[in-house]
Image (cartoon, rainbow, N blue to C red; front, side, top):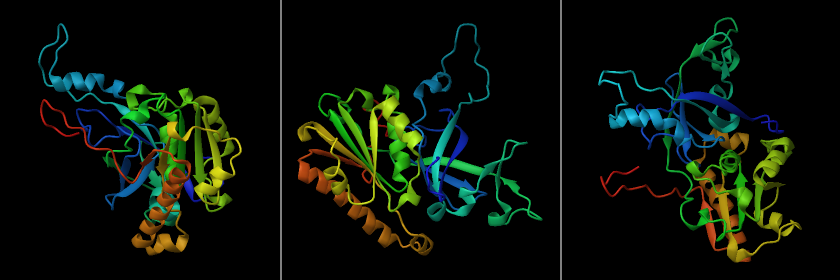
Length: 312
């Protein structure tokens, strides 16, 4: 990611997304869903995608197959499923997600993945060993971005708040903002969009200035890296001028635990820190009379189709 954080890295997986093989509920169809990844049949690790949801346009052929439609001249014969490969990019935190996932690397000679023998212990005489990586199903329903927040006229200013691995969700949201088919928020058409990225120190910054500059140039999103509270960051931001009544906050928060906390696996401490982070954003909304706060801890409601009663 070109940031200063050595305990964070991005990994790309090429995965199968065909609707013939993967249901919509289990696919990556909304920003904020988490990817389940299993290495060599082990316990699932929840990873934060940093790339946008898969484009629905690529599912045209599989959906035709599912409906049983036939083109002119075709006959109804058994066929192999239509394959649709997409690239999923995730952020991996060595402290939180484990060294086995963090040290994944591609095999240059085969279509497989390797783990470092030094940390994985699977190789012989210091060699690396190939193994299977299972991705999916994706967890949750994603950020609740339906409704008025989609309107560039109702909410002309969007304030984004991210911490920890939540910066991956922020990246996915920003880089898919121009895609109407993936629920993009059209950031480039808003009057102002700012991302406040909270870190504990310079060594925790996931992305470099080149990424932040690209977000500003391509999507109109300015990034402010802060070490204090979100309220202090906004108070210190002399460039920020906005109408609170026409503004909305989106928080994508993840506790930045220390190495000791990560090893101890103290879930109560993690939840307490997450609550405090959300309170910081709530305080911003209260101080500035901002009417809407979309938080990553509350997923969007399921879609219920009236014709079948099915839930997606």
